[in-house]
Length: 176
Image (cartoon, rainbow, N blue to C red; front, side, top):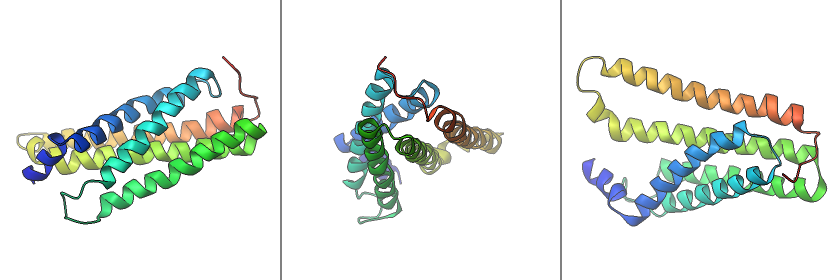
């Protein structure tokens, strides 16, 4: 297993994947919690989408775990499958000023972030757990971390769907 970790951390494609995934993980909350339709939202959103697309393509380029297509490749394809309609809906919402497209954009984007958060937890569990679970209280610390991560991702997903999109979905985008 340590050889697999080294291929990700010491390979340019692995570093690209991890770096851009972390950038998207940090950018997501800014997008969720700020006003939608603004210039800053669009700029951050483009950055998020580009980071996610490149991170997923980089994930698809790596075969060190099993030597072939595996569950992580399927997850990268699923992530791309939500990014594509999310981006399309955002573009159509700007062209048509369509509330339905804005709502669909927000729902698809919320699932891209939820998937990213779950991928982070999966990476943490499979890579760091053997090192962290040595010592007293390690399982408790991990359980609390896992619970907090899942609660945060779920809360952000629900907040986006319930508070931002449905309540503000009828507002025209501002040009701020």
